[in-house]
Length: 397
Ligand SMILES: [Mn+2]
Image 1 (cartoon, rainbow, N blue to C red):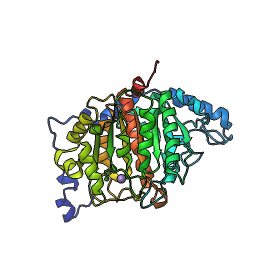
Image 2: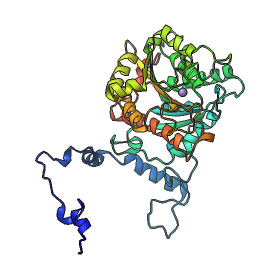
Image 3: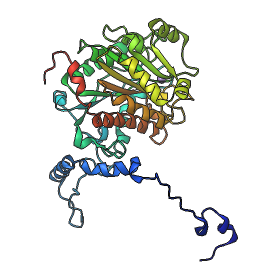
Image 4: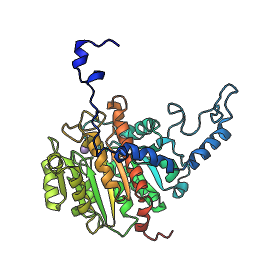
């Protein structure tokens, strides 16, 4: 081997490499090592059942196919570019009465009649479902396989009324109440943020217990009306008027920038919600902010609902949204914080303001998918799936 003068001096040259045998170095301390070994403990039972079902329904593959688990017609998870997409190719519950058989149900709310700037969030559920097919149900770092450890279905979309906000709200509340009362945790794909009121109204109608809200957003969304209607800038005014959804349990994280209307600030002040800005997040750190948010949302509450506006992330990461605002969260910051919040349990969640017509390379829809699967993964890892059932009025398992 010929070494030039240059690479003899280079730290990358073979001769100059110094091996620092640090006495405290221990590769088993790496999360990477621990996760590698944890995977061995997760069963493959549900996967094997799916493979079997796919062969039965999709015909054994052609003779030349060496992998005998491959059917002729794509069924189930594989391949990720094929098939009819429900959320993560979860079973489609055509009969909504079957939803009770599942731990969690994805429900689309294709409504953007509450949008005051860019429309398009009515296509959010379709956009999110399409890119969600990219994912496997296993997560290396969380150490869970959703297919093996919980049951998820896709109940399809609510029949929303595009030109009538109040009728759409009534449909959304009825649908959310149905899913929640069945025992399945509602996972709601928006839709614009106006749906935050009817989704909570649906859940709150099925319990006598108190619900707190953790709300990720750049916008406060708590004024009474906007453009003379209950638009996507208003959900928390109306939700926190519900008797069992106190405003003092509303924690709003990431608020700031130039799109926070003064009437919203006035209302937040009057109702004593908790607003945490990006500056607060920078100064206090992610762990402390999550701890504070949990403390306030859960204060004398029996359950917490997560309302996640995709625009809480910096506009550069989420081009496909209704009201983009620079200066928000980085994806890995928000995903880390969601993990801290989800491990205490949630009674439902929504991801709103994904507008696929403005999206680029499905990046915004992919972020929304990621938010949902990280929450489900964390709840599964911490034994919180199904815990919300105890607040359902008249629930007996
Ligand atoms: Mn927003």
